[in-house]
Length: 325
Image (cartoon, rainbow, N blue to C red; front, side, top):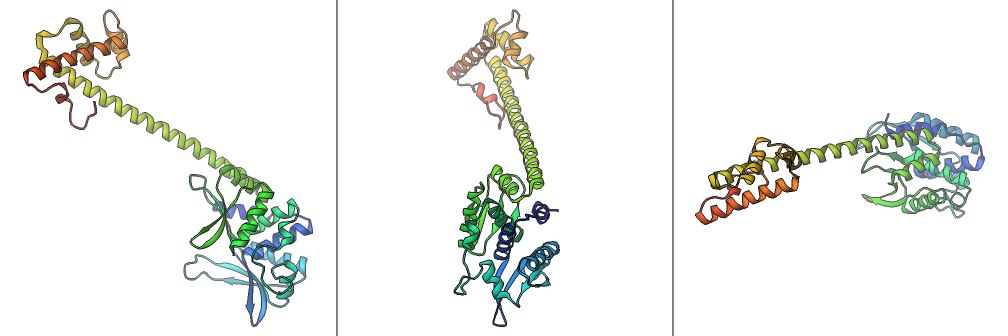
């Protein structure tokens, strides 16, 4: 199952016994899953949902809370849609239901956002609004750079109302418009976990957080491995370049090399992969890495000076192409 399906499966099983919370969840679900339609010149309330279990639960809530008996219709996927959905329709008594839920105002005008009685309700009612909205049109992506909890909204007013409700229950959400479609988006990892917990998906919140932590650890390990690989490549290239320049310096200078500089050059060529500190330990008597570096630097400088005076290629010319010194 996908993360979204896991969350919805858990939320379907959440039952708040308080009538106001049940009404808030059902109203939000109807608002975000379709809302009002006109069928045969009559106002109809319709919710298009992505699972049979959610459709049946919605139908049962309509019966228990409002005494209406909705139709359940299987809607086959068509066009760009994949899979089937389930429509829960109330035609007979649809206008009365729309008024009771607040989807129609007193002048029979559709409410653009959310009914005022929902957005000014208790914390329990506001979490129920979020639960209903997510069940209707929510999605959760995998943890990562583009992780997000999103709810597609029927209007920008509905998006702003949902954002306001979220802030009142501690969910840091923002309204966005993506390809001309209003959405409410939660991006930060902690905010996503808080939103899942607030809606009642505690198990999904814990699973998502564990997955996030595992991916962060894996990403950290990968960064360290890549960092180490880059350092090893640079060290190897530097060693190749240094040895090539020392060899060229000894060719240029021949017997003119002072003994202490020759010793440093011989150490470099005898231990090609060793660090300067390790070269110092191989010297007799031992030298500090600064002393070794200084002697090799003077050896190269002496060779380059002679090469320049005699019009010969210097030590840099011995470094293989593509190798950084």
